[in-house]
Amino acid sequence: MSREEALDGPTYERWVAGYNVATGLAKGRLRHDARGLRFVEVVVNGPKTWSLVASLHPEVGAAYDAAQERAAVEIIDWLAQHATARVGPRGRQVQVPVERLEATVVRHYTSRAGDPHRHLHLQVNARVFAAGKWRGLHSVGVVDSVEAINGIGHAAVMCDPEFRRVLASHGYTLDPETGEVVELAPYIGAFSARTAQIARNTDRYEAQWRSQHPGQEPTPRLRRS
Image 1 (cartoon, rainbow, N blue to C red):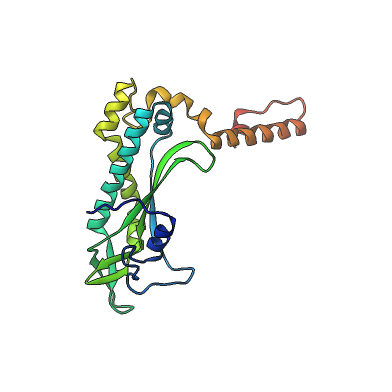
Image 2: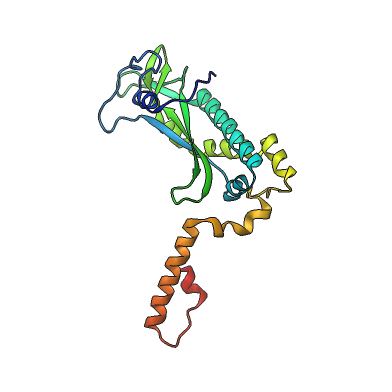
């Protein structure tokens, strides 16, 4: 497995489009229509409290980022061993092992709502080398394995020795069942924009219900509905 340098914007666009970024040559016969698959994406992330503790302590943040990168490598290695391409005429295709697979990662530190949420978008290029030429990745097989892939990413970070060591050095422990940082679990809701949005909508719904039912008190079931 080789590792290249970071891609700038134009280089990334060429890579996504299916071109060899070093030579500029197309990797086989490319589709240029809107339905042409460019890459398959897997998100490498973890429990909310991992992002919270990473925001509190730069050392933990650096260890978490590094653990996510190592998890991405684990996933790529697994895909390199299991991904396939289809060879042959329509109706008589067979699947063959992939000989070369390319992937890149895009790092984000927050969710779309602005919450602390460290994660990687691992993008596997749809052009793979198999049976002597560039071909299309059998993406259905990757999608069908997404639960296994997500499990690899989570377990790789959860069991990362350096990440665990740095957490422990700051007095934090991980719940063996959920993986959440035990000491920060009570604060998940306070740092989740989605949770706050749900709470605001629930409060508005309850206020509307009270206006329609004067003198009555809503039951807990109303807030769950």
